[in-house]
Image 1: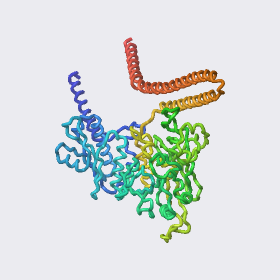
Image 2 (image 1 turned 90 degrees about the vertical axis):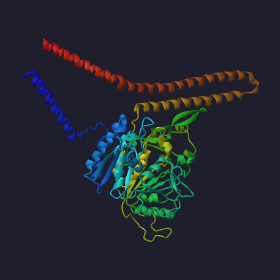
Image 3 (image 1 turned 90 degrees about the horizontal axis):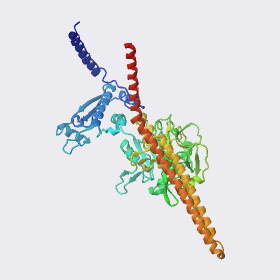
Image 4 (image 1 turned 180 degrees about the vertical axis):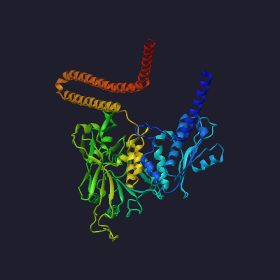
Length: 609
């Protein structure tokens, strides 16, 4: 065959193969993806698929996507395409119950006006005269209910599936989860005394108001609102017997409880307001339910969090065993509420939750301390113990303490003689249906100051509470989806280095403080000598002062050396982390390429011979 003819045939065949491959990929392979992320975050979870396949009512998804306006931003362009692809998968998995419509709201068009009326958030362009863009989602049900995700943000890309699935569940539910709260803490929820309207103060209260139909019980309540799915009781004022009876009947009817009973609330002590001690607020109820929250405070030295303190008249950072983290190793990984909370939970002066062993109930620990713990009196901890005070008196118990647990099963009433106020005749004597109670021996974990800083959440406290509410309400699918959302992964070696260095710095500071105290004692002894030896005492005093100053200077020099060693160690680790991917890996690739080239040349030489 002549070469020109062969070349033309080969080119034609390649062109046909290319066109065929494009047609096949667009029609049959478009949905195929390989998800290499650790938690499979770009693959629809089984829970989402179950939600979509169980839909009984059709749902319309209107995705407002400004294609032209978003093309200039590569991040937004890629993310908007991912949103469109994900929603197409939702429509495919819903067995025809979801219809997806992608709308491009051109500037100054009726579609743009429609997007603004729906409540979508416009994205400003890079230049002042650029038209605004949109990337938002409107969900519509056949009964006229709408739900809007005003802006899909690429910074929340990892939680995209959770946001969309949660919206689908909300739209398909006839009613939202009804949550009522009883609390004495104004730093959690505040109430306007004139209008009676409530205002969230803590972030978790704001999230609950967004996620549920939220109400606040008055301190003088006599009944639990009908239809309450979950009742949250957080450090309440002591309940009267009639209030205890109302709560007793609510639980016997299958009501779900989320309890926060703290032996010593540090937030309330430090000016937040509310009850400082709440372990006895429920009276006889906790014993009838088969548990109690102990009145002593648990301190954990192994997972103590650093706090600002004072040593020798200057500010310092030291680990405080009264405020500590419950890491992933202390969370029940077999329970839906605590599974996959990789950032851990921050608690402050918690109490131990103890099982009393009632028949017919189960007790499942959720949060557990390390073995390096010690019990302290609640009044003493509320007096303001410093890390140094605790370290000097430390006596480890060597036992893990349960800080939160689920108690479930059937109970008998705590009021066998009926309603103390005699207002209810047909009272239940035993559980009408099995109940569930989640009890935490700490209320400070609800405070923003314990888990939120300028960079955002540094612990999973908010996620834990939302999981607890969804779990008690029976929405386990949302719990699992929320747990799939990735959290920042800490640099483990850097954290270990910092913790070890903090302990060394504290040790050096304590040694310095001891030397200063000893020096003052020695100087007082010299000054107390007889008046007849004033001259000798003066000489001795000067020598004592010179020696003390030298000792103090040496201690401070050692302290600075320890602190500088910490900074250098952290800097070395960070340098290694930057050098490894930035220099070593490219060099290894180049080296591999050179070795392949050398191998090929040797093969060519052998063939030539």
